[in-house]
Amino acid sequence: MKNNNGKIMMTIDDVATALGYSPQTVRRLAQKRVIPLTQLAGRKCKWRIPRAEFDRWIAERYVARSGN
Image (cartoon, rainbow, N blue to C red; front, side, top):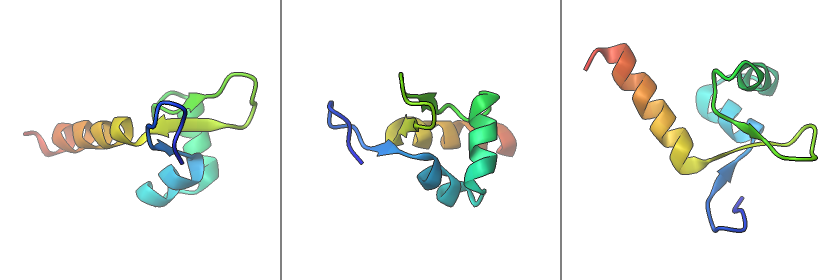
């Protein structure tokens, strides 16, 4: 899905699939700010993250865990 700026946006379901988690777990982690998803204004259940930001977040976590 693309937003108005042409950025590819990921939904909770997209993130859940990429991480191998349930959508409920991803939502909980987003609410706790563990995963940097943004809740869209005026839309109670709509969470999104730009694909590039998700990729950067994954890379940072991988480097942090591998000790490199």
